[in-house]
Image (tube, rainbow over all chains, first blue to last red; front, side, top):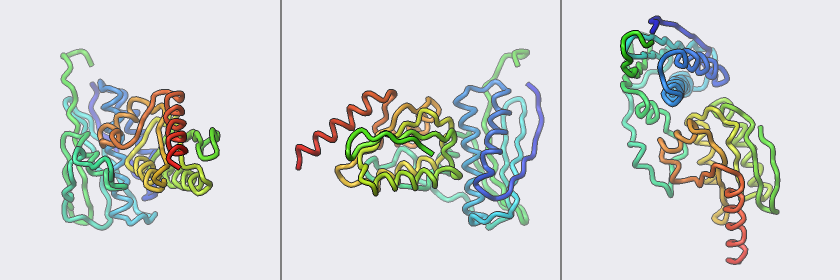
Length: 146
Length: 121
């Protein structure tokens, strides 16, 4: 499998998020990943960018949001960064399986979804930038197969 | 956004034509569903078969629709693709919505609910 890294930057508006999603989907579909895993990585990235727009940029256009996607032999690493308002840390969220079927919450599933579909999710602030790093481990393929 | 086919005075099949149900497209769908409910369509079958991608914003619109319905209302979902269906399972919303692979059983479920509510009156 080929290795590499790409940076994508969009303006902080929900109408632009699909562009990042489609790029991630296309990249992921070119490596040995199931359709489900490809969908989940795209979803996690979309949720992370949505969170940046909503919580860091307060739904205000005009702020750059960057997505760096790196492919290596055993993992895909995605770093979503913005220079908006930082969260102190990733807030605690209830597990998805604690949802009351009679009273489901209307919102607040983005972070839960990211945590559920990715192998690692971490948040930090570095100077002026907020960085959300997500990692998905790739299935091990026999040498020469990919 | 969606095609609508009334099947009863208070029941409708609405087909979502958007392939991505995300933070960009979800508000428009929310408005359309709200308009349906305000126009008296309180039993809704929502055909999701064209939807290729749904995120938490899309799921939120469906939960919001459910919450807007009166007690004798109903919202059933038709034909989600496997990846879309997996999001309902992941978020446990498959316990909240009745989800059908094909339109016929979904419409039968809505009709049964119509008869059941008529008998309650």
